[in-house]
Structures are given as C-alpha cells and as structure tokens.
Length: 58
Image (cartoon, rainbow, N blue to C red):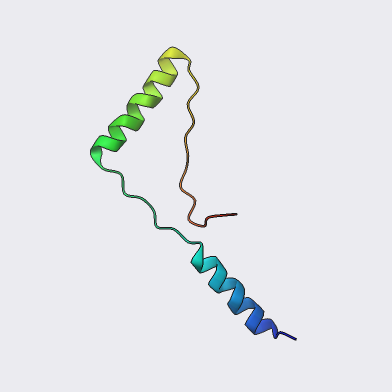
C-alpha cells in the first residue's frame, strides 16, 4: 500500500527527471531561423519548426 503523499512525491520526482533546460540561441542561430522562415514565405515551401517543451515525453 502506498500513501497518497508518497505517490505524489514519486510523480513529482519523475516529472523533475524529465525536465530539460531551455536552449539559448545566439545571433547566428536566430539568423538561420529568420532566413528559413523568409525562404518558406517567399518560395511557398513548408518548413518544420520544433518548439521548446520543458518536460520531455508529455
């Protein structure tokens, strides 16, 4: 038998294990993103953007 407090603590620990830190983009990386978006817009080409998710696996 597991106490509700213990269950919550275990779940909280598992969530914390899956947390990631937000990447810091430098000026060159922002330039590459901007160029890709501009190219996509002008050439009507689809691009895929991956957004930051702080918790992996949700």
